[in-house]
Length: 311
Length: 283
View 1 (cartoon, rainbow over the protein chains, first blue to last red):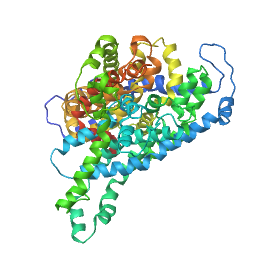
View 2: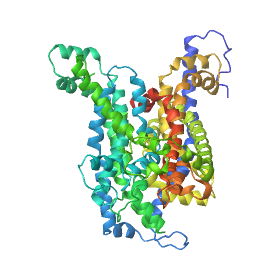
View 3: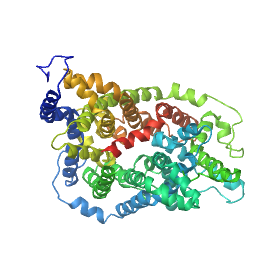
């Protein structure tokens, strides 16, 4: 599809010719753009948009795995879940897990970024290593935590017993309250590097001269942070926070590996409870559980999109 | 930098070295733990009277066990096939999509950009149930194609967004010059834009690789039977056994399963965030 037929290659082009060429190009651009977008859109429609719509349909049926027969029951599954004590706990846990861990990740991540932003020997090596918790497959790093939280072999318990702080090993994952705290700590551990590296990228844009000028004017570290640094890193920090909330909200692996929602269904989030319900063959209910996430995710996603586009 | 001017030794300790030690211990201890457990003989591992933080003797039995008595090698192969397949598919689609979004002005262009970004935020936990039905209706259940086709749903949005930002950083004049010289749009893209965009394409590719390598839920539900498991799924579902002698091999598998992504990332740790925010800040 040659665009230029009259021009000879290498011939000097007069400005009007270039002008005409660009006009012609932009006319063709529209259809070419859709052709270019087609492969991506086909995959997203077949494996994302269609399943999403189909999921809404499944969630309104009493379908069960292995049985072809199903009835359309409207919002019955959604309604029944509201009275399900495990589902209520799931909602509560998801909020604790999604929002409760954010302040810790944010503060530690900001601190990490400020530390790494200084110049010191091998800083790049430290940066690469400190990013590991976020890079390594969560299912795998969760296995390390599975052992750190083990009732018999936990090194955390070992140290505390050795120092005489506690008498017996801590029951990290067997007690409902301990279990959710343990999950949050593992989640914070995984999330800190993401905040750290995102904020660190923002810090590169902070003008050193401004900071030095403020220091000469007698501003202390705290004042300089709020007046000079924070305005520059505000947006990237908000974006990282929203990303983190969305991911944590919809998490699965960490909880699946560490507690599978136990003990006694006390640490489920939407993902794990939905998976467990699917395992009990109640596919309609399972679909409804996971779709309950949608409104919250949609709100967070739209806020995030606005920040990202106006950045 | 908030620490400008704090050049005295005491401030250097409080502002840099102590926090650095804290973060090194907090963030890297689990990996240290995995490594020493994977090298520790069982007798030492299960003896709670010895200091568990130290290694008194080294054994490679746990690693040997993985290779001889488990399907670990097969799982690694599965993961490679799925990861490479989905990365290639997603990257090819994303180069075109990112180019269209970054370069062409067309009605609905910015709307499509926003829509693709929103797709990136759709978590697997929201879709895995209906998607499992779609996968099995297409006859893909428990085959590599199940993941090669479904992983691009989260790889394409990220990669297109990243490449869109990257293509915009390449001067459009270069491309126009090629067009004026008689190149077609595709020729200009292939010979002028793509070579310049190689760093961005590489970043997107490595990122796709790691996302696909780390995925868990789809792999568990769509490809979790028999010897078709991926490494994360296989390690979690097969190696945790009822007796207490599995810890060494479990941690050994953890170490080996982390190596490919850690290596991939180490090449572009600096590109990573700039890549992620390139689309964001230029969108």
